[in-house]
Image 1 (spheres, rainbow, N blue to C red):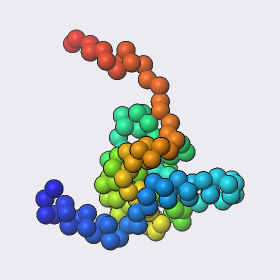
Image 2: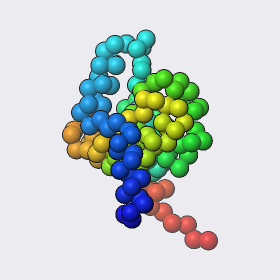
Image 3: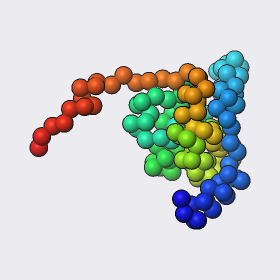
Amino acid sequence: MGDASREIMRRARKQVPEWSPSQVQEALANQHEAGRDHQDIVLVDVREKHEWNEGHIPGAIHVPRGYLELQIEEAVPDKSKTVVLYCAGGVRSLMSGSTLQQMGYDKAISMSGGFGQWKGNGYAFVRHKTNATAVTCWYPR
């Protein structure tokens, strides 16, 4: 990582709050107990589609980092919600949090350690079934 990238990350870490996977899991559990009228946390997976298909946190919505600025306002129109972002390891979600703050989402939070740490802690995740044959076949042109 170059000097400019390190500086961008340093600023983002100062600006965007980070929650650990255990803090996110606890907040989601509390929200679940509170019921449908108290759904103030929106969980957003900013990884690429193939990463999402390999598994994601239950209840998360998928808005890839590359399309964040174009799709987030449709996916999360209420900018007063707490938006918890996660990626594989915590870098893309931190950068996404900075972007969301610039877009008016005052409660953007990055999950430190990302999906990798979430799984490592043994928390539940959803895995999509794929057709293994379709994934591994190569078609000649």
